[in-house]
Length: 617
Image (cartoon, rainbow, N blue to C red; front, side):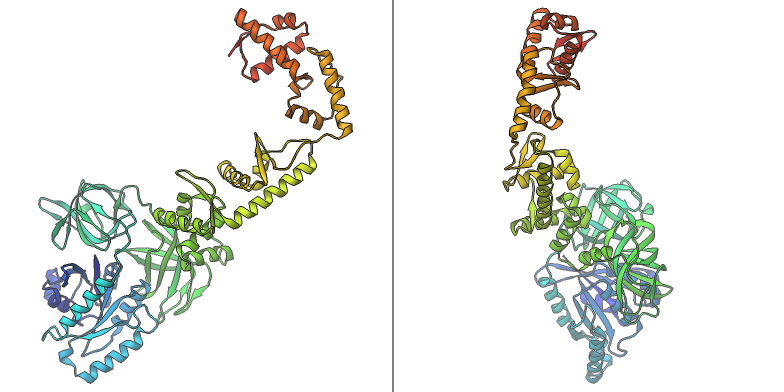
């Protein structure tokens, strides 16, 4: 679907032209017909030669109704900039053009109306003047056509030009998050509340559960209509009337957004790129109080400049905008700011629900610049560079992009190895190649240092290495698994080590451990407390399971501990339970060692304490 819209000065023939093109009078109100001037948004449609239809939105041209024009212009695919042939460009021509430029409407046709009231020379002069006005705007180079609603001259040419644009224009992207900013709400007998607007983002269909934002009221779609025809599904770019149940039309305000329930949040604060128009009557200053227009809504707002003290005419910068009331802002939303009766500028929302920033913070400005100017893949790489390790949903949230788009880009970026997919499965984790390489280098340095400091330890505890790398558990596991695949690092139970690291005793250490083990084996069930050994050597023996520690002062030779354990198990299988005294008698040892042994068996889940007794688990 395709939406064209008018723009231009009052009394330049916009509504008359639309009626002649379509056979539909876009002026609906009695006051409009009585005064011969458009006050509210008007709607019509044009059937083109391939059988498809182009929606047309007609906006008022009087300076007192600029805010109404703003509420209609946000959904334009094609702008029809109307200039009367007997007058040429006028003040609202320029202001409407500035608004279209701020909204980045890039396709347009300049329609010179009332050509029957001007000779060819005057029309040519008007074309030259318009070309000069269009220079540097989004509509620069737009084709022009002279028409007369009275004689019909040029109308067929205009229809053909609109049809050509409609055929060439790519269909709006469907991202499964429909959003319809409401421009009208009324009641129809037998249908209840009906709202209209231009649908963007995703599809709507009968039966969908929807919400109105920011009010939060909920409803269900009963029916859909486009150009007075019933439809089952509305697609992005459609001018659509939505019949909803569960709410009265009197509870609905123009400017609210109709969305699927649970898909959008609202915010009062967002970061943005901001540009002052070239002929602004005053600069945009820090903490400037303005009225902000987006979608079909308007809100009082304060502009907090992040990169400038003020933006002079034609100057661009970065800003954080604080609105008086919440709106469902998303990245890419375009807006216009005005104060008093003047349009000052506008821009593009980059980060919704943004935190407060320090002014002139280079890192903040760099991030906003990437979001504003970078391709979506550049934005993803930059965002992931800040997150270090993240899944697609976390990237989409931080980058303020749609999840489906992020997942498509992630596939391309991993194929080119700009990004690394660290895990497989339904929710994989990603990092940048540079981050992976940096974390790998940090891990190798940390392990090499650890091995040098503790040569008798099998490896570094995973938690210690994780703290060194400053990663959470899932991030750390993903990074280590990826590094292990490079064969430089090995996982070893609860340890991580360099793949080539081996614990080796020196001859002196070997003598010391042999002496220690000999004493343990000689004293078997009652190892003497005086039998001491260096803590690192003891740790190495425990790691190799040459010994078992049953307490600070109780170390058994491993084979002796296993022998005692088996005797306790046999005793319990025969007698159902065992006491400390039973162990003393069974092993011929003291209470100290008997208690230490049983407590260790409890920790090993061999036995469990029940009162003063132990039973097998």
